[in-house]
Image (cartoon, rainbow, N blue to C red; front, top):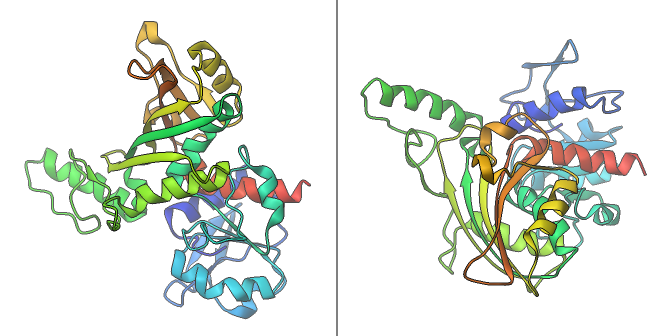
Length: 327
């Protein structure tokens, strides 16, 4: 495993144990800076090794969550060692020949790998889980989504900073962020990934391009606005989907309730719909507030929440590996 000390790496370790993933030997690999430290797993202390080409010898699977530059650096060594790399960075997602996989949505794509399978962006994973069962019933024409992304999307240090700066505000102080460009404490701001030439940020274009690839809809009209919000570790999304024909709300609700990886929380009489607290630390995404778009007869709107670290990252990577070993 590459990147065991980060938020996703820690979640991977927990899930490997919780899901009884078959492991005869677990190697924790990192830079020389982290080599020699230890991580707890299944009641034992594992020593982190410095990553090298030799460290991949005899390895079957590499779960990589150490960032795109590290993944690019060690890709060839991993493939040369005969291992499969399931990569959580954005390094290879849009590369031709590299499957981009959400097991509940496009499982067959995983079997076309050439040594590398890419784990999609967290927001894309959560979104496609909800889109897939609907698109299988009525073809989609257009998707408009606004995301409400938690601190966990920026890593463990951002989560800790949100905790610390929230206390600063409560104590009457002025929060000063060192991890994110602005304080998230009692605040929100547009996603801080680099703006592209079309004035969309990188995070927004990840959603556009990755959804098209996963759903095999290269011409899907898609627009996204991504926002960071003061939530620790679950993302939310407001979604508007236009179909080729009207889509009955009751049918959409039934399809989503039965969809793998999806939990329906849709109780209009109680005004009860998904919240980040419903999904934190849990596998399924939650979908609700499913309604007819009053401005477009062929469109539906809904709301979803999902744990960014779990299904949005670590769980999806492990499910990809489980998919391959069970075949």
